[in-house]
Length: 114
Image: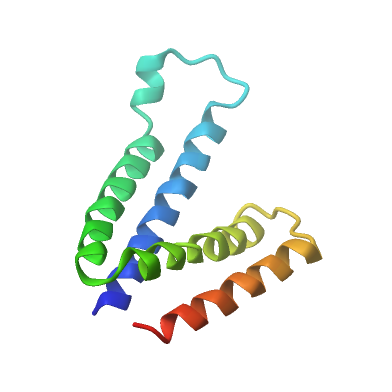
């Protein structure tokens, strides 16, 4: 159960980050008043996802030692890299992919302790 909560916290945080990216991209090159920016559905999705992620994270911290749980949040690095490549068509170089592989290896090692 703890690992599912941890995965949910990671995914909600990633959704929040992607929604933030979409929000600021929609503002790029356009002069908008603050009131218009505050009406952005992407901004509200980001706030909702990040808030929900925080609440799920609190549940994770009740169940796992912080020394195990917090490093597992590095899965966000993996998820966001994949989203950057697949959704935003960003170039990811070999060194970055190597870092992703190292993160996955570390998460696999930590996962053995839960």
